[in-house]
Structures are given as structure tokens and as C-alpha cells.
Length: 433
Length: 142
Image 1 (cartoon, rainbow over the protein chains, first blue to last red):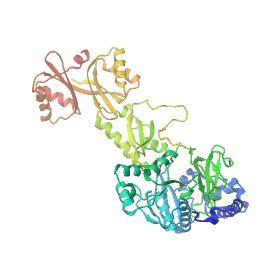
Image 2: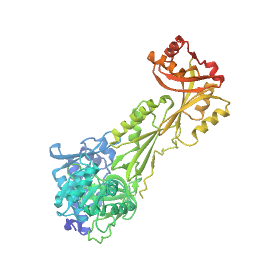
Image 3: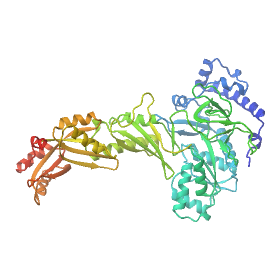
Image 4: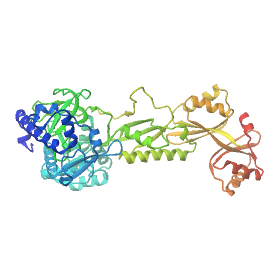
């Protein structure tokens, strides 16, 4: 089922023309409304009139997460606050979030791309969709919610967690579609099995899973546990949120809604644009965004793009599952975690030194994060209650900054490997690719 | 009267204690008494040795987190009620015990090693009640 055949199946030449026109308008908007971009463009000697087609995209500067931090909270917004109808935010490395804003039109556009995404999974007004992504500053819950209402489905805005309630509504309401992180889907599936619920009462037929990396093995496992077809959805708040791209029923990569989000693959070292099929860093230009139109935003996600026409009839390019990151960000239970966040907590506490190791694992399908911290001799107490107190203080501080429970394990001094140059700060035991 | 006890942080991993006892053995350091406080992730070894300064130094050189903790040792007759009598004195004087461990020697005596926040006060009240206390010189020779 194709929600917007006109755009999703548009000829590539016609699409390039539309993108070029939208890019021209976007550059004009940001040149006159965002001092940050005006400064950058002037530095490069580019004026709005110089950008005439999609070919000119490569001449424009990149935007990074650091640029968003430097201009926290609203510095990159292209509209006055009066025109902003919504904020979302993601956790940042230094305690400051990355803030994104939406105008009324942005919300409509977001609803449109999520409606297209849900249609790929066959969702219609005859479906009952349980949205078990978190509602709040995280884009997952509300993003799916608006798109699901747009297709006319009956939405259960249950948000994340509260597993017993999730199971009860699955059974009582007969939800046909569920949207959540893949790890939570697997956890729900196991809970259904463990609670010995009657499988015939579970009516799920499709799952919209994203916000964290997952594997084909997990897909098989979730499909078996929940008796549904599992679809992969991709997005990031800096571009819009979920609905930047989505798998169609062919499941041969995720179609990027290129009429709104122009993708490029670049060499993360040189910034050089790479041809279709080559592995590199994914970059987006959200040409139709009003509140926060970012130019060539570097996602740090590594993947490939494929432009061959899909069996489903859509012409929009497909991106492969991301194979990793070009920075050290981890995605744990849908939450972005940077090792530098852990470091900042340890540096702030007078009792610890920044010798640490993040150990990420997946137990019972839920990601776990353990942080090993060396016991410094000057802070070593020979009383258990003191050391346990220290352990809990570190854990509480980390949990509150990361927004994710972090277990802390005290280890002997000198046991965390020091390496020359870039220290090995992370051991990721999850098997994800 | 104050006894220098070594406290060593130990991760719970196989063979770690053996490495430590090996280092003490190689340096001719005798262990008079010890106990281990353990949690799920780590343990704290408390040990009374001969040559405590040397022991501290060699263990630190081998990368252990180690510190010297002041404790006191009460020498009692190895018979019913002796420990109770000693503890009653401490309780009556409002001295709380962080931790303790005890060992018996072959000569009809037993020694309780006690860690308290107020060791000097403990020594005073115990002496007032004619309790025999372990002398540093004795214990390091053991």
C-alpha cells in the first residue's frame, strides 16, 4: 500500500528537479533567518542565488551535532518562537540536550512521512496500533502517534514500559500493530510466553521497530515470539524523528522520503561525496523543514544507499541497516550514550578518576550497561559501606545524566587497559551485525 | 596498643588472593591474622602481618589498592563469656564496632581484632577494665 503515490513513485529526474527547487528555497530561508548559516555561507562566498539545482548541494557546508550544542538551545532555529508549536530533545554529552523545534507545517510533514511509513507496513484505519515508544521529549511516541492518526488507525498512546498493562491491552483491545524498540518487542514477546497467555488472543500482525540497532536474527526471533511481520523504521530528531526512512513489504532496505530529506553518503574523513552502493556516513538535508532546517546534517551513521527501483514500485532510494557509527556514540535501549558523558560524571566527582570502561550487553533481550570504575587508592576505604556508598553515588549520578540505569562495578586500580592514543572505553557484547 | 592492619581492595576473580599471598611469601612476610569482607563484586582483605610497612610497599608496587588501618586487639581467655565481657565494656561506653574478627592461639588465649572510629577511647576504657591488649611489637613478631 502506497500512501502518497505521487511523491513516493516519482521519476528520478522529476524528483531531482523538486529537490533542487526546495533546496533553493531552503538556502534562501536559512541565509536570511539563521545568522550561523549566513556567516558560514558568506565565508564560503556563497549567496542564495548561487544555489539553483540539486547539483549545488555539494558546495554547501555540513552541520554537526556540535553545531547544535554550540547554538543551544534555539540558535539554529529559522523561525521566531511564536511559530514553534513543539519541542523535542535528545540527551547530550555534557548534560545539555540537543533541542529540536517544529512549526505547525513541520508537524504536518512529519505526520505525512510517518503515515507513508505505516502504510508500508499495511497499516490502515482498520488497525489498532499500540504506540509503546516513550512519549515526551523523545520523538518516538508522539512521532508515531501523529502519523498513525493521519492514516486513521485507532491509537493506544500507552508509551513505553509498564509491561503488564501492555499485555493486558494487547489482549483486551486486540491491538493489530505495535510500535516500540526492537529490544522491548522481544521482551514483550517473552513476557507473553512466560505469562502463558493464549496466543490466539494476540492479534498483532505488524510491528514498527526502530530507535536502536538490531539484527536479522532479532527480527526472526521477534516475529516468532509475537507472530507478526517486523518492519524497520529509521529516523533522528535532528532531521525530524522516526519516519526519515522505512522498510516496505519487500524488506530490501529502508526507503528514504527524499522529497523531504535529501540523503548523501560521504567519506567521514574527507567529507567527499560517495556514489550509490558505497559505504560511508549518512548525511541529510531536510529541505522542507521550517523551524530547524539543517543543511547537510552529519548523522554519524554508517550505511550504503541503493537507487535501483524497488519491486514495491517506489522510486525513493533505499538505505541499508546502519552498520555502525563514525563516532563513539552507543545506542542503549534507544538512548544515545557517549563515553564522554561517563567521563564528565567521574571528573565532576572528587572521589573518582576517569579510568573507566563501558560494558554493554543484552540480557533477556534488554540492553544492559555496566560501568567499571577503578578504585583509586586515596579514595579506598576498608569499610564495605563506604565503598558501596561510593558505588551507589557514581551509579545515581550516571543514571541521572544518561537517563538510563547504569550499574557500576568497582575494579582494582590499573586493571582497565591504558592504550596509547585513543583509549578503548567500550566493550559492546551485543551481537548486532 | 594500636595495631597497623593492611586493608587491600580485591576484585572477585579467581586466583587474585593467591597472587597476593604469593607476594607476601616471596618477601618473607608472615600473616598473623586476616579476614575478608565480600560483596558480589569485590572484597576487602584485612590482614595483620609482620613488617606492615614493607607489606604495604610491596603490595602497592604490584598494583594493589592498599591502605593501613588502625585496629586494636583484645586478648581474652579462650572460654565462654570472655568475648561478651569485652564487648559489653565497649557497648557501655558507647563505642561502636565497624568490623571485627578473631583468632585463637594454642595457649588458651584468643584475640579479637576490632576496628572502631575511636580506637584511643576504646583503648582507655578497656585498660580501665584491666583488659589485656595486643601490643604492636608482639603481633608483628607472631
